[in-house]
Image (cartoon, rainbow, N blue to C red; front, top):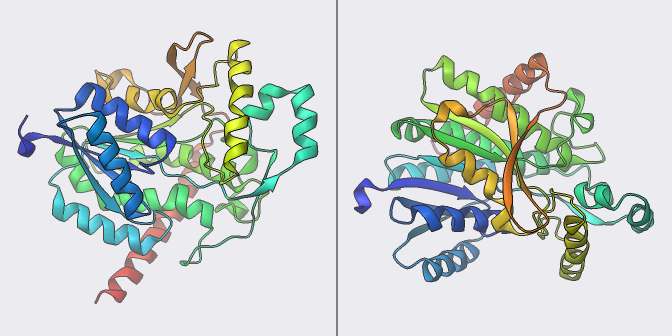
Length: 338
């Protein structure tokens, strides 16, 4: 397919485990159909990922764009650059994520190791998460990276998604997403003990509710939420030896029949690719979370989950608040660039 006729896919957090998994799965089956744009915070990391993928998939058209998804001003600048470079956007994988960890709760780890190993590996409550963190825009840091940056980028690229004729937005949520960790009184999750879980719950809410916005504007764009299962990644910025040593536990639990232990980015990306390419589109549901799972023998599969605790009024309130914040951000951006 000529470069002019290629579709366009954008992946944030593209140099991470799941991000690279999405890229590899896409290029394995659709190398000649897509221009793949890798979005990373650090330009050199994006370039390393680009050349790695080009070497693995000769002839693939892989390009990069660098910006900090947690900085609203950088996101809006990146959106303008993206619109200058591309005429459409077919797939947008909202994959970048931050789990701000300060350490591990070792007593809890040892207790869960002998009483609930499955829970130890499926949840992040043994990770000590930082609270009270704000970004340069005065927003909750984890909220800005995991939720707001993606939301304003989706809205900024709406026109390009519409031009594709069937634009799909795919959020990478988490198996740890919990309604119990979310509160409208602290909707950015700044002071709750588990900002990551709170932010991933917001991803689910917004991924579902933004479809109402698309319908009202008669846009041919559909949003989905997914989770990658349990991937042995370095998302929490914990020491590498911890990430590597826990892999053995993941495999042991998988061999015991726990299907959430996807472990690798390749297996974790299965649900993202499933909703990105499944046809017909009408077969997919927008009010569930599609998850990546794997059997003891390494065969992956996708399953869907109800989003427990979803409340329509709460979702509408959240979307109103994040939209108001987006409009304020755009006003500030325009004032700075006047």
